[in-house]
Image 1 (spheres, rainbow, N blue to C red):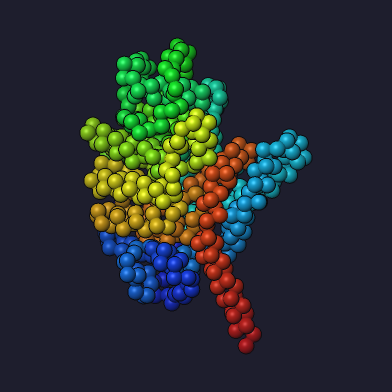
Image 2: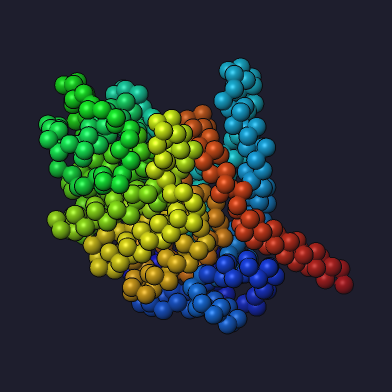
Length: 501
């Protein structure tokens, strides 16, 4: 399948253009020389963009040349992105912002308006796509012009009752329906949080029941529908310390309503030919989310068409076991399955809950182990993609994981235009990796949360709290942007001097 490349991108992809070598330390250069390739419709070989010999590792990604990475990005965009990344990497500013948004200061209308206005024109505009579908569509169009795609996510979560669930569903359905008005194939996925269409307390109770069922197979769940295996013996089961009460008739009815909401959303996605990514949450409610996800996948994933994607968080110790268990069970039933792989976004809360119960956290003890788990799950899923029994979205900001995935994809024979393999990064993050993967011919999307600033605020606060380490470690992106800006300013000055002669 051919990869759609925008005319603007083609104009900027001059292979014979003389490239400047990015002068960085050997350590950074070695880890950054990963992407840089062009693709033809039928070509499965990766072609170097530059005439400079490839590094000894024969890597596929090359981030050495800023003018190729950011050729489709305006100078103003680069300046704003660079400033926001520097601010987000400065802990005192992040701490101050979190404190203000959680303080009573925002209860004052004047203060709240001032704070929201500042947030909107800094971090909100950097990490989010807009306050409504119209604004999100303009952001999506800019990405499309840059040869990228978008994952649309209306930023709603944690509904408390059926009324709020129904209101949220309406917004999700509108989002999917709007896709037909956008450039064809510009939207790679729609996105939903089950916590937005099923009351959070019900998800907790269903999760408790599913955990106890694993501990005691005689525990009967009359409401349980056909699904795939959810938990493994190594999964965190400590949340359920005693036999839970059965769901009440009213709770069973509410669970059925949640199934119906998810099915309506899946039907709308199928109608508009756009897959649905279902986000993961913290382990307190994740079993119920996987239960709903897998039951929908059994209904809607068919004929090698994956409509429903679950999410696996690689920082959980049971991640590999769960993804293997579910994938192989689906494979035996002839059901194509899809997963989005992420490292995880609830490190602080998971550790706090485990500590309060006097047990070890369910997450890996080191970032090295998390990286290893992520890459292991990636390799497993890529082998399944090569066998045409699964699909995967590799949501990563990690350079080494991008390189490993690109090499693995090539080694197992996955063509670069294969829609069953997608890469994704959050809007405003890992821009170097995003554009490098794009240049290499892979399908790449940016995750685009959108909605009113106040409604998306929980998402922004979580990004700030859970990703502070990632943001502070965005050294490569900031360095690439800074060097590219220096180059552009130097070129502008030299050009001005030349004009005077």
